[in-house]
Length: 69
Image (cartoon, rainbow, N blue to C red; front, side, top):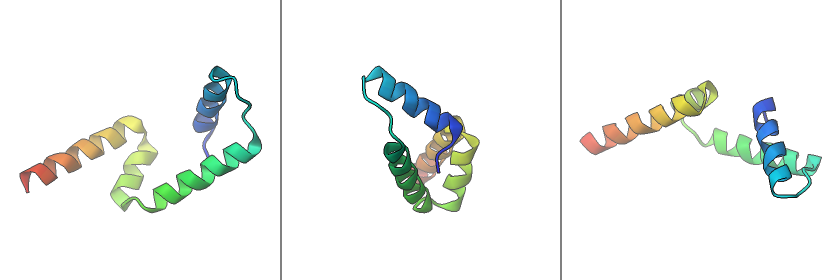
């Protein structure tokens, strides 16, 4: 399932490209998103739920820790 914000972004993307957003495309996006989120670590999932800025911060912290190791 995709959020309202993700649905809004898809609507605008498809409108900008002149394509029609169908329910099948929304369903496919939800399936892909759910599969991708299952592969994330629990900490990454929490950061992703908090929003894009939190997830970018999580990735930067992870990269910093890896660089120091």
